Length: 579
Image (cartoon, rainbow, N blue to C red; front, top):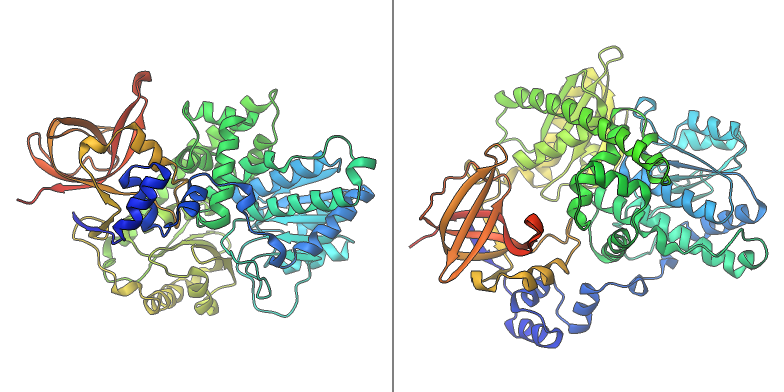
């Protein structure tokens, strides 16, 4: 394990530690993140809604807010439509919850894998048949021009709330396109998930209705408190793997606090079936909640997940069981597809390839995104996985990125092979015919090579890039509950805000066992007179023995095993000490 201590001005570290009464390693982790002023550091540790920048420059917002507020005043029937992933489902749940609190009759629906990605003409017809005069889409709609035109033919105006890349063109057929990627959008942060944009829409509509006097004269009850919607924002933002920076970090942090203070019945039931009895953090969302909310949409219709988020106490437990069963089925299907994909790659020189492209007949389209993510993790290459329908020959693909490769740009360069594509830099979807898969492979490899991926080489046998950047070097005696709590305050962790990584050198292994069918490593480490336990998820195969001295890269955490709290090292990497 090669480690490289991040460079930082140690006088800044000392000032942060002294002013904010922080441990030096915590102050150093702040400084290496570019948070160097005590006031900014305090805001980073304790984010507030007041720190959100006004969304005045967000293109399409004012038009959307005006139209929605008028629809609420008139008592129009409003349709809400979300895509089938967590971002789309939570956006639909957030907007539905808010509009119903305003007294609106809402007709809500979410996409189905069987019907294809996004807002469809069939969905437009369904909303028209239900009597809707306005529809708002979440996490889709930017590229769904045919469906929006169909809605117009049926007398429906459409508001799009989406964060996917905006296709080139002079106009959009929607009533309002709220998308930070519009060329005319001047809002300084473009990385928001759709559910965060939905929160901005709800907050702005509430303000507009307040200014119009709606809640005094027509409101069905108290003015809605949009802070109660922040748990939806945390779920969708974390699950969609957008940057946990700027507005996203503030909204997600406050959303997690909201979730831990007041759990929705559906979320509480889902945590129970997932066996989670601890505080909800970003990892809990990523590993326990998001896969289960995603599961129905991966297999077919996403409606069970939406119904869970909107459930009351009487239906939550039953709906959580439906998602748990779907998630178990999803895991089985996913494992089969991953095995088949790995078999296809046995004859491929993956070290030389700038991208991983695999396609298989009979693969369910709903799991190819997960398989793509797993292939990225294994090979550190952008991955494109295509599920081909054996009867029609149509392939539906999903892509995940790494190393800064922009997937949307790569697919745009290969668009001659595609029937349709959409998404953003880190994740994208596309369709094509079976006959074009080979050509797509060549085009994507060329596009990703041009983006710099081909120059990356992996450490031999590690599956990871060899040099690891370290935020701070510590002794085991410094690793206690206080340090773990301080570092946890730098979260939530995710894209563009990774967990801190500390290093302790020349620690002695005094106990060792492999757990979880041998895939995980449980160690007891000593450093002078200090002893700490450590857990290395996925490090079970690593060669280490009792009595050896090792360097460990880790994040301090708090273990609550059998009700006892103690500091523990969550290992990111380890290596035999030199010298």
